[in-house]
Image (cartoon, rainbow, N blue to C red; front, side):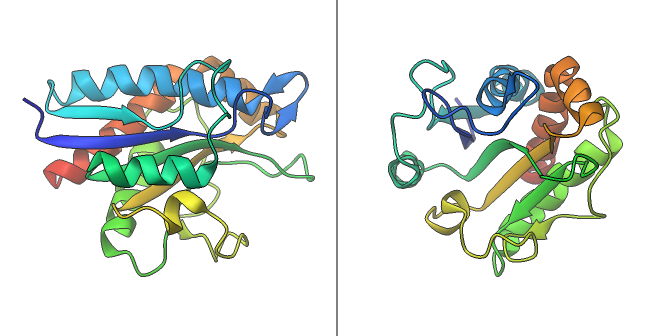
Length: 196
C-alpha cells in the first residue's frame, strides 16, 4: 500500500500545443517526461508513491479540462504534493536553463522545489544548467500570481520548467533526455518525502 500520493500535472495538450519551436511542441515533451516520471516514481519509491495524473498523458485528450478544474482534481485527490511539468519559452533564444517555481509563503512548497532543483542540478538531466541558483517564487519569475497549480491547490506545489524550448541547445537536451529529466524530478520528490 502506498504511503504517499503525488498529483502530477502536465502543461497544455490537445488543441493547445503550449510553446512551439522548430516544430517541437511543449505539450508533447511534457507528456513524454510525464510517462517516464510516473514509472520512475514507482521504481524509486518501491511502490510507496501512488500517482494521480490530473492532466491526461495522452496528448489527444489533454487540454480539455481548464486549469481550475485540474486544480480541483488535485484538491479532491488528497494528494500530499503536486508537481506540474512545463517547458519554458522566451523571445530571446539565448534564454536557457531549468527553473523550479513555488508559491511564496509555502514552507513545504519551498522544500519540495528545493529538493527537485537540487536533484536536477546534481543529476544527469542532459546537461541542462539551472537558470538560477535555487528555486524561485512565481512573483520572482515575473508571472505575478498567475500559476493556478500554485495558487489554487491545497498541497505543497512546485512547477518544473525543464528548460527552454526556444533555446536550440536546451531543446535538443530535453528531446534526448526526457527519461533522465524525469528521473531527476522523481529523485527530488522522493527526497522530499524521505528527508534526504
